[in-house]
Length: 167
Image (cartoon, rainbow, N blue to C red):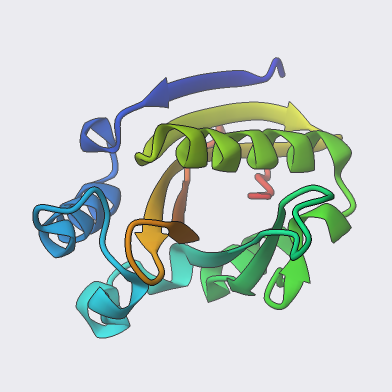
C-alpha cells in the first residue's frame, strides 16, 4: 500500500469528534491565536480523551541542539492500538525513523505557522500499516509562546483483513 498524506485545516476534519475538539479549542482561544493549557479542562473533551496525546515542546536551555518533543500523556486508545504507550517518552526515542521524521515535521510546521494543522494519512510507514485522521492544536504557556501541543488521532477504516497500527 502506497503512503498517502492529505493536509487540511482542522475545520475540514471529517471525524465529528475532531471537529468538536477543534471548536472547543477555538472557543478557549477567544481573541488569542491559541489557548493556554490552563484554559482547557479534560472533562470538557472526555468524548475523545482516549485519542488525545499531550506533547511538551522542550527547547534546548543553551540554545544549541535540536528542539525535542516529550509525550506528557498518550491517550489510552492510541496506546492500545499501537501497542506502545508513548507517555513519558521523547519523540526521538521512538523506534520508527520515518514516523519520527514525519511527526517532527508536522510539529515544526505548527510552530512555524503558529496555527493548527490537520492531516489524513493512510499507508505503510516503517513497515507498519496505518490509517488515521489527525489534528494538532497548539497551546500556549505563559503568554503568546507555544509550549505544548494537543494532538488528536482518530483511526480510519481499513478493508477487511487489514490490521492498522496507529503510530
